[in-house]
Length: 104
Image (cartoon, rainbow, N blue to C red):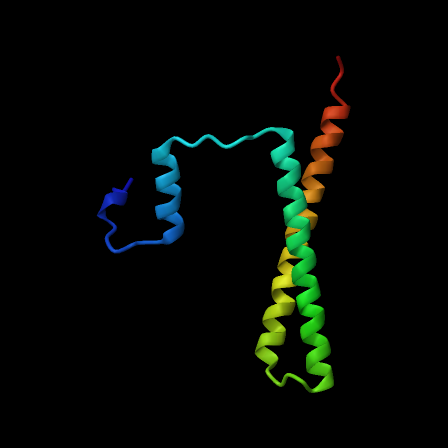
């Protein structure tokens, strides 16, 4: 394998923040409550993206916006978020069904 330390100039605020949290030894709660809250946040974000895409469509239809790129970006963000949400839902249902089929 190549040595990752050979990479230079590869910086990202996300990576720096993750390293800082890791260095602090912060342990995140991985209980059911945090999973449920994460799912609710994902649903709210998906809903917001869907609403923004719908608003962009309305503005474009009424002639208030002529930028088709912004419309397409809003629609694509909403579509990707919806696909991700459906994929997570499917995996949760699959896990639930597997748990229910466990014989004690």
